[in-house]
Image 1 (cartoon, rainbow, N blue to C red):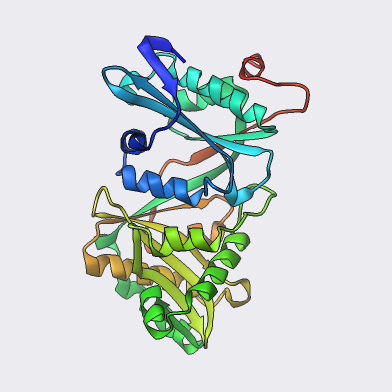
Image 2 (tube, rainbow, N blue to C red):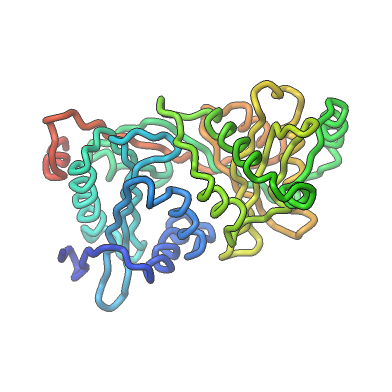
Length: 339
């Protein structure tokens, strides 16, 4: 399909991941490359859930934008889809984003979408206005938080390790557990799924837990995985909490902190804070500069822990949602008529 400024829209090719990663990095303002994008897509399990891509390509400048449509594993309903769309900053305001959104809306509506979600940061004024013109309304917010590792004084929190130890909690790593018991991974996987389902979320639908194979691929065998940065809390032989770090292949100074959680029956003992302190200690020992994490605004306890440890909130991410009523809209052309 030909669009504005001599740009064509075509399906994704395997070679496009590097260019898509560069666009993500430019729009986010933080390192994000081909490896990160491939792993991100893998977490969404393309072989299990519906996915579709459009690449905007210029004959001279290559990939200048993309749209990725997918079902949402972390809050699954077969008629709920997400659209992730970005255009290279040098190619914005030329109608490329509009062409990508039109085609993407058509694609998900043909798949029976009844709720369509998209995200933009609150300080991206043009992006939020763009989504609102298509009939998207604010649905929820989340916060990215960043910690300057060297500035965290861990001595202020020395009592947490003693407190959890007195409760019979042992803090360990996946690397240590695999040395102790090479067959521990199925139990660690069960813990991860339990914590994932129990995490505060913005939608009524629970997550569809990742398959065991996807868990292994993304959390254990991934090129971004750090087995000695995958922290676990145990009481006896029972795993009761986790806090997981992943490295950034594009910038060795960054770490991404994924799920931190504790089984509900063992909350209130300081385990989550103790686990996060272990991740910061790991980052300081290894010479990392920054840890980045993201939490729903409904997860007040974790946001409070982050603030206590020195994480600084960045501008909020706004989740927008468009509700499509059966028989009312059947194409992107109809979707645009709301404006």
